Length: 180
Image 1: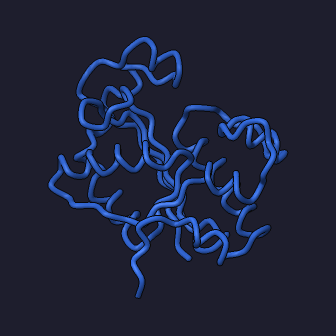
Image 2: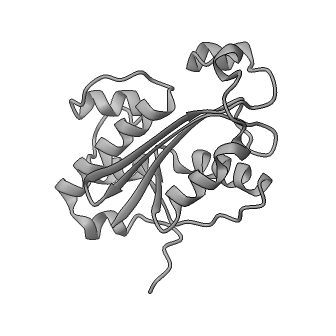
């Protein structure tokens, strides 16, 4: 199983109207990390005070960073042939898909949500937010709302779930998986 665990930070919640400010990707072959990728991204518009407060990412930090077009081919290459995994996968998937579409790159990948996976494999926790889930699973604390840190935390959750429940259980939760 080849996974691409992804997290993005953005200028807002709607993919059609907002842009990515940071991307983190962890590639897993099974439970082994084989590569990581991280980039700040210049969204081409000012970052709102709310987003700055949430993520700590400022206009100054993204000044001089590539716009998404500058990292699109690399991101597409990293994601190709892998299951797209994220905590609340629909958000990250829609943002990546929309940004790739703006670069004339069509993207359609099977998806796995670590929230749904954790609820199935680790039932009974009071909260499945990334922060609270890592605490419940006794994983190390991390810098929340930063793409690579969030991605590494989600990758650890995936690895724990694979080790506890096995590949078959995990694969049953993958959406849009094309049968070979």
